[in-house]
Image 1: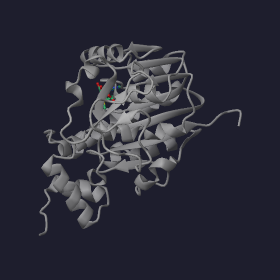
Image 2: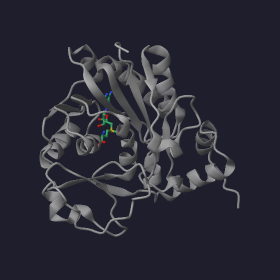
Image 3: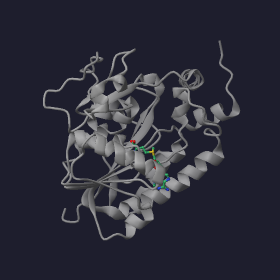
Length: 302
Ligand SMILES: C[S@@+](CC[C@H](N)C(=O)[O-])C[C@H]1O[C@@H](n2cnc3c(N)ncnc32)[C@H](O)[C@@H]1O
């Protein structure tokens, strides 16, 4: 049976240059809204050798799962367990874990800034991999910042300060970081695949508005990174204007940066760019999907 696509669905699939079969798979996933998959990441409070008290999927063949991340089996409710309330682990989307897999090629940073941090998932994933001497979890939205602070405290993240500056304010600060996380606000097209209503998210107006904001955030972000440092850019949306095109805009406009290959994500390499960046779609089976690209600032001494 041929699937009839709405104009907005067709527009997205054409922009992603999907085959008819791949387009049908994506649209079916967006309409079904059942692609959500959850995961948990252990916090620094978890004792050494701690194993979560619920059944987990065997992920040993995946090759990209960040350290200390577990994927509960269907029907398990990790947030109902007292260990969750005690802050031994944090619950988040599996796609979010996939987006942070690129950190595997980033050497442990001395200082790091999560520019768009609430509610705290990427900060938790980073802390499970390495604990910088100083980490700033930044969130511009005051209400969301409150939730972020609560999560940081509940999971006992050491060396972590919560702040609320805008990206352009960070750009004028006299501080440079080894690693920036830019999990950018976006049109959130993948929410549809989780069964969450998101009116207008496939339309040009919403996509263009977000792309403009993302470019502004990234132009500020590049000014906050020390020589040899990295930015991990990620979104939970599909449109190339908010993903590949944001990165190509930065690479064209700001000298001294390049996109870094991530071997563990090779199977997800985007075909929409001539630089390495990675796309997750619901058909991969690891949640609703997302995009990530790791950027490195050339070390001036090299
Ligand atoms: C995708 S969410 C971040 C999710 C978070 N990194 C996590 O893993 O839990 C994007 C965040 O960016 C914030 N935001 C919105 N507009 C922003 C802007 N202009 N500059 C920086 N952050 C912004 C939002 O309030 C939101 O908390």
